[in-house]
Structure formats: C-alpha cells, structure tokens
Image (cartoon, rainbow over all chains, first blue to last red; front, top):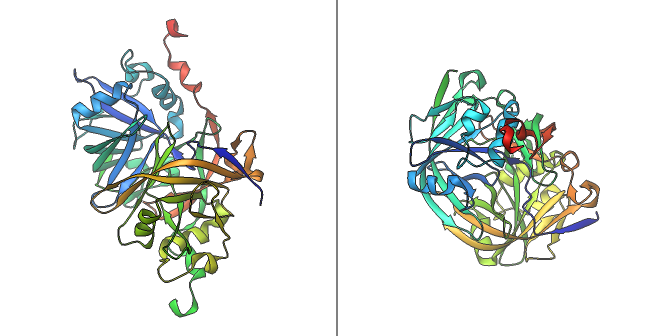
Length: 194
Length: 194
C-alpha cells in the first residue's frame, strides 16, 4: 500500500476543539479554543491542554491554578471558532458570542453554560515545551447537561461534539456507532483463551 | 439549563483510539491501543500518549526511545479493540489480527501498514503521573496512505478514524463536515475589526 511522507506535522484523528475557561486577575471570564489536548491519567482523572505563552489564557491559568475544559457541540461551532481566533485581552468573548458565563462549583474557573459537557480542573503540573506550555489538570468534576445524559454517562449523539481537522482546517461532527468496545476484539483471541 | 455532576471522570469528546507501536528488547513489534493522548506542541510537532507502568509497551517504549502512533480507520475497529484488551507480553498481536508490521523509516519503531495515518515519534520526555506515564513524542514524520490523501493533507472521510467513547464504552465514526475553521467565527467580530 503506497504511503506518502508528510514530514513533521501536528496531525491526529480525531482531534477535539476544547473551550478552556479561565478567570483573569480582575475576575473576568474568558474562553480559549484549544485543539492540543487529551486525557493523560486515570487515577485521578487528568487532562492536558497546551497553551502558547503569548496567549491571554496562559498567565491567567497559571495564576489561578484552575481551569475548565468545555466540550462544544456542533451548534456552538461558530462560537468555538471565534474563541480560537480572538484574544480575551481585547475582547469579552462571552458578550460577543452571547455564551453564558457560569462559575464552576468545584474550581475557581468559568465555563459556558451552553457546553453539553464541562471538565472542572485544578492545575496539577505544567510542562514547558518548546512552543507551548502543557497544562496538566486534575479533573475534580465533570458536569453534563441533563438533556445529554443516557443513564450514568453522556450520550455521544446528544453531546454532538465538534471534531477539528487540523489538516483540512475544518470542523466535523461525530457520526454513527461502529461497535461496542471490549468485546469486538475477542474474535482474535486464541481458542484456549475464550 | 439543568446540569448533573458526574464526579471526577476521564471523559473528553471526541477521544481517539491510538495504536502505539514499539519494538521489544528482542526486536518483536507490538501495538497497544491508547485513548489517553493528544497533540501537545506545535514547533516541533509533539504528541502525548499515556501508558500504565504495568503495560508491556511501557518499558519497551522507554528503552527504545521511539514509538509510532497509528490512526486506525473504522474498518480496523476489531483489531484496535483487540490490541487494547491483550498484552504483547503473551501474544503476537500482528500475527493474531493479520495486521502487517512495518519498520518506520524515521524512527526505530513498528507500525501497522493498514493504518491510514501514522505518526513516527522520538521520545522527547516522559512525565510520571499517579497511574500512568505520559510519553511526549516529537513527531519526526507523519505518513499517510496515498489513497487517503486530498491534496497535501489526509482527507477526513478517507481516513475514517475510529472515535472512542469512554463513557458509553463504544466506538463511533466521524460524520459529515460542519464548516471550515478560521472563518465561521468572524460573524462575532466587531464591525471595526472586519
């Protein structure tokens, strides 16, 4: 199967579009869209988001020691895109987009009420990398809109998360279910293990 | 909008299912499926994957200082699921699944030829977290199947990446395009900025 070398590139599939919520020194809420992030630890649950030192969010997050990670649904695509191309230094992104700022109940950080799922994080550690600072947050709580729940967990179809394509510079939605996990793979187990 | 607190949970949307490829001390190739990971730096491009110390991949990755991150398409869901529920300590996952092991051209690590996109990584740094070790890899090269390319980047529909739902323990596919990025959000720009 012929392959092409694309060189060093920041490609990963799927990639999220995360709304990082932080208060500034005056207590003003801000959101920054970040695609560089992911879960990094199970016990306790932890998440990373990487932020350039030049970003308004960078020093605010380090000072506050707390942040939220909001998951935008596809209906919030324009608001999420705006939060990625604008700085909170010069603009109130909540006012501009009409998103509703809420104070987290578990950490001192804001989030947009419209996000179906929000991770409330305490800054555990940060790692200085060449172009970004990787913020490692302990997830103190996850909250979800009641309307998005299916039993004890959020329903993928109702969350309808935005997917970012860093190659094509586009947003996608999540589609249909492929299969349940932790069972599909058992077809490859050797007979004696079944 | 009523919300429910779910407590500390490893939830993020969307979440990938990554095939981490490493050689063991005898040069045998192995794959481990990891959902804890994401891009973490732009220049140079870097990616994180978190691995439990008990995993066969853990010490092999640290010893080799190199790994690959393969993106499985939905057609590889069963193979990816198997690579997450089986240990390379006791089983040759390539032989069991029929995936084809290839040696990377840029780093000393294997990958499955069937993966539409593969990141070839040099271990830059690792961070010991409470339950996992976060491996930070510098992406030395990304390769993609020619059949998945659209101009100079992989096409989302052709890559057809597997999406993992840690809440519902299911796999999904990526669906249709929502909008192009970096333009959608300009509707919220103030008049004087346009």
